[in-house]
Length: 219
Picture 1 (tube, one colour):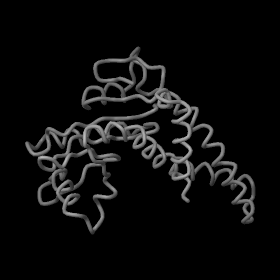
Picture 2 (tube, helix red, strand yellow):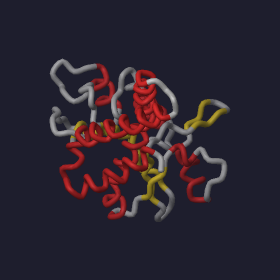
Picture 3 (spheres, helix red, strand yellow):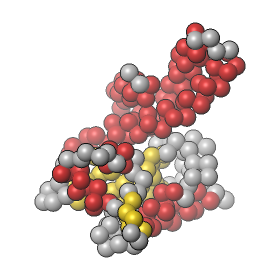
Picture 4 (tube, helix red, strand yellow):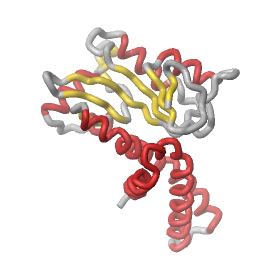
């Protein structure tokens, strides 16, 4: 079992215990998971003959790749009931980049393509929501990020590209994040990420308890 899959399973237990408050406590959940990952990874590396300090560095580097996918799986779990209620299906850009797609997913891919002259590209989409009845229609792209650093322009860029075509301008683009570094959570002297994303995106959903709400930024 891959580390992110283990974290996803652990989150289901956390969700059962926390109920609807689970999303507000993602930082607590992931802090615990990170420490468990560090302990297991460092021990594994040391058993393979790697010195402790180097093992610690490698464990930290490993966590960066694990947390991204784990957070996506956690959000998928949180929206599962909503999607079931409204007959919404989900996929992601990694799946849509596969060479062999079902006719359904091939139609989803074609409905998402952004054109650059003779080239066509898929926008980044950690979770893509679509319906199949009465016809296949992409509803929204969810961008899932743990933190932003200098990457806050990526999602707004794809939103702007989708707006350029009448075939894709209806697709909503939302950001979902625990915003662990408080880069978009507060509006007093707002930082660049909050200003840019709040202006360009259709909405931002914060998986935490403390933040400044607006018409686009909510829990």
